[in-house]
Length: 180
Image (cartoon, rainbow, N blue to C red; front, side, top):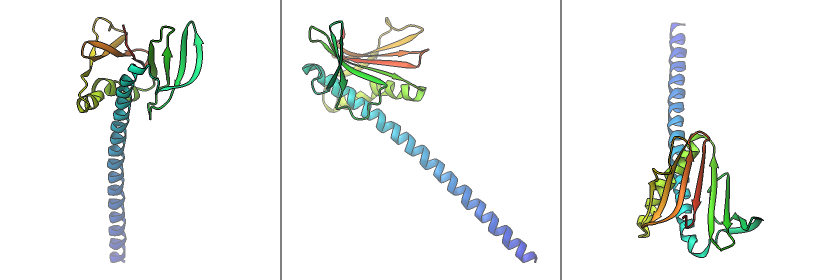
């Protein structure tokens, strides 16, 4: 009887150890998969931003989808051709004089907002370096305050975009186009 109790105890102990080890391995795999997925999402958003900067020269013709509305001389179009941008709202806006802008609004939790911030400020470096384009994001202290942080996207000394982070509203706005 003693041998049987020891055998059952050993069997149960082994089962508990195997189960706990399996759970730890699963937890580690899930964390790695999530961080890899977030990195891929950031890289895709950065690639989209890089492509949008290239679209300035033809007034975003490659990204203009169906017309949404015209109001006060500004035409708005749906955005096409951007893979996994995941902005809450994004549009191509065209003024009467032909100036075109890409505008995106991103809201949500801090993780999502950080993803866009990292893609805008650091992710583009990878593509700019590979394509020999001097694309640089930098803070704009004179436009930043307690309520918002503003970052400019520059090609040499020309501002081609901006990212505005509203601190209290959990919202970011990206504008790509010749911003004056």
